[in-house]
Image (cartoon, rainbow, N blue to C red; front, side):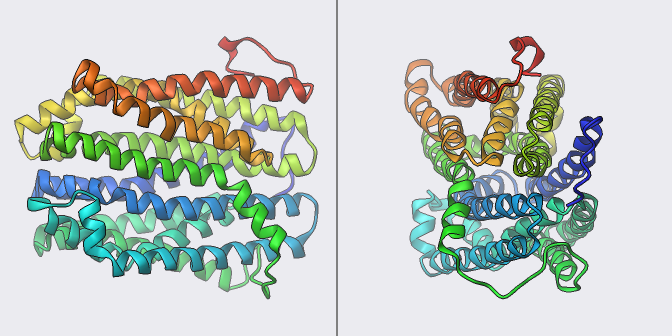
Amino acid sequence: MNTNINKDNVLKTFLKYSIPCVIGMFLTSFITVVDGMFIGWKIGERGLAAVNLTLPILYLLLGITIMVGVGGSTLALQSLGEKNQANANQRFTLTLVLNVVVNMVIIIIVGLAMNKILYFLNARNELYYYVKDYLGTMIFFYIFMMMNITLAMFIRGEGKPQLSLLFGIVANVLNIFLDYLLIIRMDLGMRGAALASGLSVLLAFTLGALYFLTGKSLFKLTKITFNTEDIKNTLYNGSSEFIGQMALAITTYLFNFVIIRRIGVNGVAALTIVGYISMIQYMILTGIAQGIHPLISYSFGAKDRDTIFKVLSIGSKAVFVVGAVTLVLSFAATEGIIRVFSRGNSELINIAKYGLRIYSIAFIINGFNIVASTYFTSIGDAKISGIISLLRSLVLISMFIFTLPHIIGDTGIWLTTPLAEAVTFVVSYTYIRKSKMSAGATVFGFGKFIC
């Protein structure tokens, strides 16, 4: 990582790291969204529903990957801040090995127990073969997807976010071409959608791996020593991210469970469409969070408190702007957005349009919760980061999804996430305020977004 953080212009440094991260994460989500467009056009609501039913498996693997990747990269970057290159290399190598081993174990288990898992995911009757075709193909590519995410974290941590962005652009171009070829022209259905995504991610992973293998990287592969303390700290530092992703897997399953029984296949397809919009916004917010993560981690290792809170303030304002823009677009162009995926299904359009307008209220506040969790992870306070992640993505949503629909009907399904984010926002702001006061930083009013 370039250790020359411009203390006089932290905004410039923030933009240098965050803009490529934001674009990169947007492109990552865009692969999935483009798949959804082609699936919606060619296959219809059953295909869209099938994608959503497989998401708990993806979130499980993402949880493991991000836990190890964020935890390991945090330690490695702190080592760089302490000028300890050998320790940084050791932690880099350990992170890669841990992610390969743990992800492969999960993937093999899923492959061997495919039919039981499909039943558990509610892939039954008309949806069974759609989900089996999609998940049965993606299972061969998940390891490359997870390792690509891990490598990208370290490339950005080295101060080369533009390189990670370039790999993402190349993968997206290939994905669009393969979607058209495999889904539209060759009519391979859900297998075609999975192959398009998988081969695109495989290309991005190959480019990232070649970067580290050619010796041009700052982090170097080294002979691994299984340091128990480093493993424990890696898992601990990334635990809040794991909690967040696992909670997302559980709550996605719960949403699917409730909607498929109350509304049916069109309801799950509508949830998928709303999820695509939410995913784009969430990935942009995650890009901002990943942009501030190395800056805060490095500054924490260098004991530079002023830079930490300047970066946090800028990040908080940035996610608010993203949320406000997404909220306005969701209301102003609701039907146009949904028609891109719906293939003229009027029932699906009406359900998704109603759901998106209620769900989009969450966009204005969820970014602050993500930034707050990232801040506490970056300074090694995994406990508070975990509390924030657990509240917004599991505890409150689980409570609301089983109560609100019984009280106010189907509206309660779409209102669950906004209410969960609102309650978490109060908790996140309180913890941030206390952290700044304990560090001796000046605390301003709420209206200035903790600047």
